[in-house]
Length: 272
Length: 302
Image (cartoon, rainbow over all chains, first blue to last red):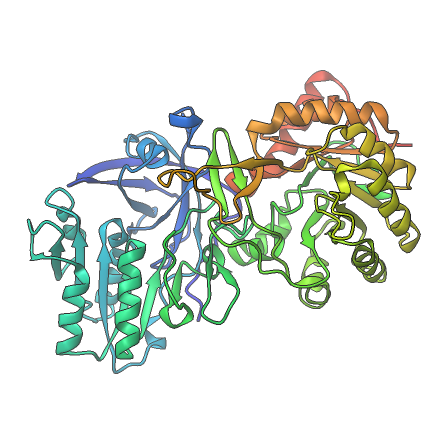
């Protein structure tokens, strides 16, 4: 079964109902009355309804792709995890209650239904930085099914480590050693797999981390489901800008064939 | 609702279509389902460029957000003629609007094969030639040189009874002369502008290009003023219909394109920001017409 909820056709404008700071991250919650419930791993294209543009280099211009962090029933309310790293995210983190948020989505294919994974393998979540987002909604779903779904999360420093509070049952690594393991989240992954490798790894994070996860899983014959990121102009297959090269040759579009891909499809997670 | 339009015999419900390569109706249906067909945003659908052989497209990165616009270097990925006929055409035939298939070849033989094969398919209502490509035999950009373009269109004209639209490149010394050559050789309409050749430096590696293919094409509001000037130049020169595009984001922008002499307006990059932009723009255009108490722009060509 494809993990895709269809998006309403066209861009719609939601109202932000909450903005909260989680360490260096901002979580925005927006009401999406009548909107569909996204699958874990699906994403939305976001843009501020006002003042989208006119910053450094007359940007932003295009909407930005974000995996949904969590969905609250009753509405529904969509939550997104943001970090200000450029003109688009810089504008989005300024939004607060009452502000308009343009969205198109849910888009793409999310994490595959656990029933389709080998039943003898447990779920192990592995995230880095803002890549924590799709693992939160996925863990909600797995926990609801009675799967323990432990998480390994990596962050840069003490300012970012509070991102780990967005999930339950998480082991943390920080680059500067301020929280948890001093080192990479992939160190934690290796240790876990040494102890028990009857798992499916669900991962999201910056490309070098994700490539590490892919390679570790491949080496050990552990299945991996990777939520990749890419710059996107459209999010619905129109621009062909978000392609990733496949092990078998050719490319696929992350926005319509991903963003969650089976690690075996890739020879490498691309750096961009 | 605007009165139905006639473009070279195609009946169109309103004057807004898409620019080639800016909307993939098959992928969009995967994302939005059949709601796409029920509320299709364009009065005709223009396909991505089809080439004779399949193409993977350019190495990434393929996109760069430019000041008020987008530089793309996609490289015309497509399944090739056979893949298009086999996989895509049956799906595109389900769209509720006429289908314009865009083709490109690097020799006139390649183009002739494409045009002949598509002419045999009743699902194809019109053809658009992407001539923003060097002729591998002469080394000249087909669409940049009036004589080169005249020769190519003269060769293709007898091969199809379908309306033949020539998509002009803005990367030429005299766009009106190229448009004139297309008309003289028997083109039924011209469309412009294609993207402006553009380059984006790598943000951190001095001297390196950001795009995988080094150069790309600039689109979006950044090119609107250039587009209006070129559309005016071309519309003043030719008597065949002009399809105008370049940075159109609102009904008011669309009205400017029609006032410049275009019969139809194509929406391109704005589709990326809002997949239903075509619907909004045609509605805004209607509202403008209603306010002005009549039609704007010129009606269909002779």
